[in-house]
Image (tube, rainbow, N blue to C red; front, top):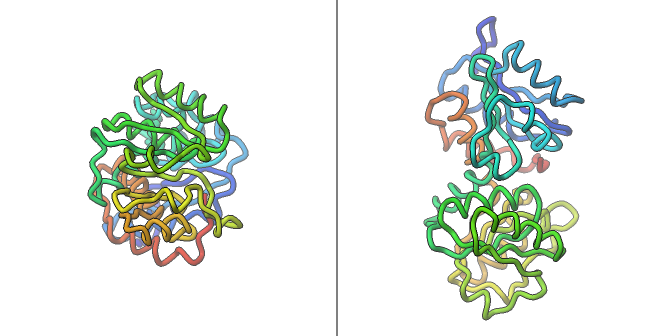
Amino acid sequence: MKIPGALTRLYCIFGNPVRHSLSPRMHNAAFSALGMDAVYLAFEPSSIKDALAAMRALPIHGASVTIPYKTPVLPLLDSVDELAARIGSVNTVVNRNGSLHGANTDGRGALTALERAGFSARDKSVLVVGNGGSARAVAFTLLAAGARVLVAGRNESRIAALSAELAASYPGVAHRTLNSLDRALMKDIDAIVNTTPVGMGSDTHDTPIDASLLASAHLVMDIVYAPPMTRLLREARDAGCTIVQGTDMLLYQGVLQFELWTGMSAPVEIMRATIIDAMPHAVPE
């Protein structure tokens, strides 16, 4: 990386906590690889409104946005792309000469990871496990790409609410509780995406999907990236499934952010290597 100077362009992540985020490593490695005079820092503002005011004034040319600000940031922006508006959250802000534009690369990062594994979403059936912000982002993006989506989770009222919201834009979205899934239903599923934290932290020995439901025809993706190989992915691999690790979603959502900010092609393999090297120290955002 070049030594920062008076003309160094500033990028950052806003969230709380973010001190363990992998984003600074990943984006600074990308800037260095391309010889860019830019730096990416981590900030933990107490107010996202004040953070955006600072972004305009300094200026900060681009920002990642993570918990707890992905939704509160929406009304503070000058414009938001259609997909981010449908999802109801923003994880990327681009500063266009003082005008702040919001986007969401979470779902598109997941879709890119699936596509890199040979999966085409159009006319495929995808089981999305979860009902939170990541589930919304992944489900809306898959639906926009032409997939059929079945939402599953433990809390029936929450998955029913998410299913209804998705179906308002894409009719035909269905939902099931996890304990009601069976082999007959799973035969019609092409891909499974876990968007829950099950398998992470103290849950490393748990899985959201019973191994008996997995078949070799399934592609299985887990957005959990610490650990990189969750129990779900290990059991899916043992069942002969194609698997996609959460590190791939982390990578491609960052790649898309970098390209939105800079208008340049991201050095994907440099960013991937940086993530892999940092994984023993990673704490999920």
